[in-house]
Amino acid sequence: MLNGHGKVLVVDDDPFIRSLLAAWLQEAGYGVVMAADGQQALERVREDRPDIILLDLTMPRLDGYAVVRWLRQRPETRGLPILVVSADVRAHQKLAGLRVEGILSKPFDLDEVLDRVQEYVPRHTTKAAV
Image: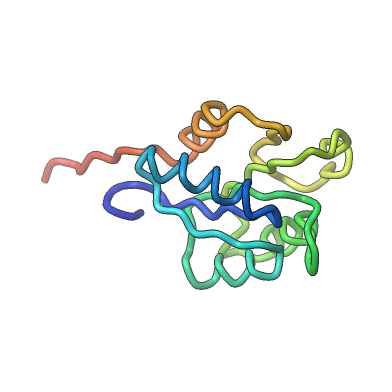
């Protein structure tokens, strides 16, 4: 958590989509780290320990499917929430057997993206009374 807010990893090979999602999430109070492909995504997961991932599927070097498989095979990342953001209309079929928390279709609605992220990583945390 960053200042009581979650950290979101935005993974997409399109710099416009990355920047758009990052700006929207930062405005909502989230910390954001970005990656342009699956290989960078895995590096960011190890280095930045995000609370949730927004993941494109079709990317160079290492696609989103491989990222999901890699993360789900490791105990330390098995439970990391992943929301797929993809233009692939067959993403549901292609992801069969791989656990993701949801699939958002491109073009996406920014408010819907924020709502889905909030389901897994609330924007505001409260400290328990001691």
